[in-house]
Amino acid sequence: MTDQELLTSLLAERSSKRGHFILASGRESQFYIDARLTTMSPEGLSVIGRLGLAILRESGWQVDAVGGLTLGADPISYAISHASADTAQPVRAFTVRKEAKTHGTGKLIEGPFRAGDRVVVIEDVITTGGSALRAIEAVRSNGGTVSGVLAVVDREEGGREKLESTGVSVIALATASNIMTVLETRAGQKESLSASSPDKRPTA
View 1 (spheres, helix red, strand yellow):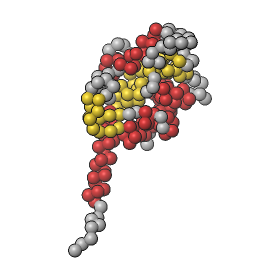
View 2: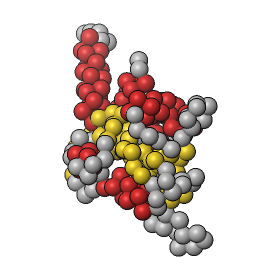
View 3: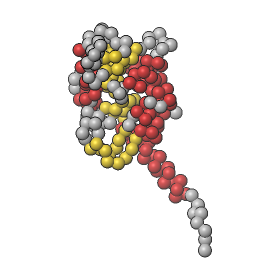
View 4: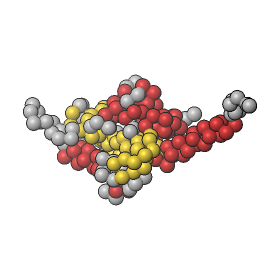
């Protein structure tokens, strides 16, 4: 199993639910993905670090640092940074506050972010793209340049297209349709096993 397949499997098993949900965007959905149940787990952190770093290297993007809007982007950014520690090109991680601190230095971006950094903005789940856009604005207003956006999941509801319409490239490690395929396959396997199981009820 590849890291991409493993990540999709973890997301299907741990992070995905069917039902009736109101998303952060206000939209209604019959499918909910709480990526944090995967991104904050030991297995999730391990695979996301490896896979995320590999995808960044393959992308050709210039990357000094990765980060995004707290809280969803935080474990992903840290996992990628940690995975890069022993490489020739280590990547620093940062987090973007939802609001600037009202005390101390009044920072909006925390961590070893530097003006002039070439940044990949991190997102856990892209729905409308709003969180990534806020992080992009924060990076640019603090002197960084945005090389692209890396998301764990693209819900395929227009957010990716919205980001790309602003000139920012987007890569997703998994998509909602791929996760749904895994869920449907597993449901089919369970039904098949149930149908093939011998009837253990006592006979008259």
